Image (cartoon, rainbow, N blue to C red; front, side):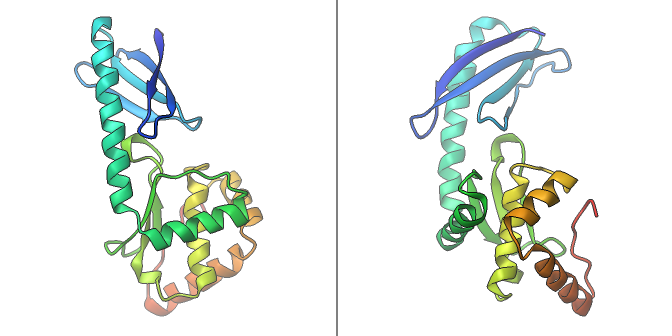
Length: 191
């Protein structure tokens, strides 16, 4: 598998490592994802000429800037502040995300975190929980922050979350109780 390594300037002036990898499955389109280490993997069609790579990297840089700008517009400042405090207090500041905001279109989910593609690290929290006890809302935020490290509800996910946020089991009980009263089964995969 042929790979080409580059560095581009990110939207905050930082250097971002980019790996361009040829992919036999792609015919025309180019796909990119952020990796956990902060680098970007760009998959290109097998036959894409190497002379097009500089243009491709310029486009990527432009897309990153647009995504960053959109994330800033979509971030709820109070929720961002709260997530930063939870990150500092419970995760020693180790979690990184792009945006966090309240949304009104979730019925069975309390939150979600995008773990790939151009919106990787975008967290959405259902506004239906705004009036819940603060420690339960903090649990939902901590839950979604943990998804930035562990995308699914694996044993490692639950170990990390319960270790970081001591009220996890109590909050999960609250969520299940509210779900019972409202006749809803709030989604938590992998149980």
